[in-house]
Length: 446
Figure 1 (cartoon, helix red, strand yellow):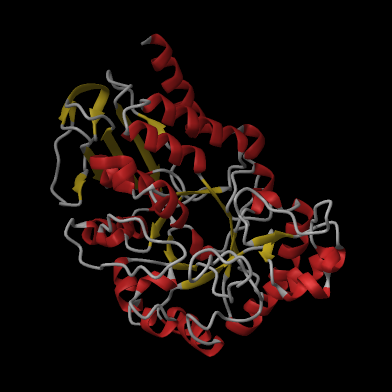
Figure 2: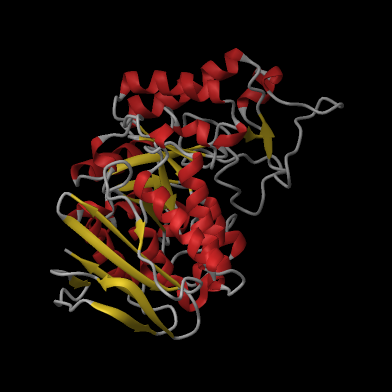
């Protein structure tokens, strides 16, 4: 018990004060980022037709949901050599500057980007710099741009038998890659990139790429599929909070308790610059297809952890179908349309969370939002209670992250004077003791 209380105090101190070495860091983020919610678009599965044009019909709905940033999974043609399944993987790209005819035309994509912009949403494109398909034009035209085995064939990474890894020791390849990225900014007016396996690509390449891209669009947004602090010093705006995601799964399954979340947050705070933005999620395309839906991994806690991702300092992600409570693994290499019937109330949940993020400045992303400070309670293994405050806005959060009912006592009155409950907006009376049902949470705002 003493160990847990000491750990809680340390984490609270870290979140209240931050790493002194990092305090001098200045923001490199576009102004629109701080209250933004990311939405990952799986074009193939979004509609029965699986095209940009039919996806566009959902833009008003996504705007109403409160989405700010659309992340399109790769839209380029997919390789045919050693293709997986019938339709292949988005991440086996045959040509960086063309559009997969499965989804439509380049003009169709440009149009959907413009329509999103007209509604006030930004658009980023999933970029795959680490490898191409095994029949990309570069394979024959620039064979030395690839990593090859002793027999001269492109090497195979993991079980990715449909791709060929690129050799970043080749300067001409680097230039061609940056030119291809710039093409999408110039031609389609996209607002940035989500960079696939960014940790596999040399940092000096990313530095050069970022310098080139900001000359085309100064407020370019960069999201790294990585949890590598060096990438977020001055190149990438946001990173995957993979470790915390895995810990949330473990807590939901009863394999670990709240201390594991505290330790994960502590590590993030110590390792990353104060301006680096973690992206929190309960699902994405990889998790859904390969590791299971949030309901498989988190069970009855899925909604609770979705709320938690919005309360912590960072950005939140919604994957295609999550706002409808989709409880099915989407096939990755075949057609498998999403059922948009929401039987679980997740549309209302995400809509209210997105609205709260935009109206309560305490929830802004680092380094604009309120610092996170834990509220000490006598059930620290199960109850995660904390507060954030910024520019007159405050939020107090109490989560029972266990499958058991808990009566917990705080070391201060919760939530304090002048708060209302979220999302009911009812006035609440401060108390020092709360009883919580399994996975129940209380959010108080002012």
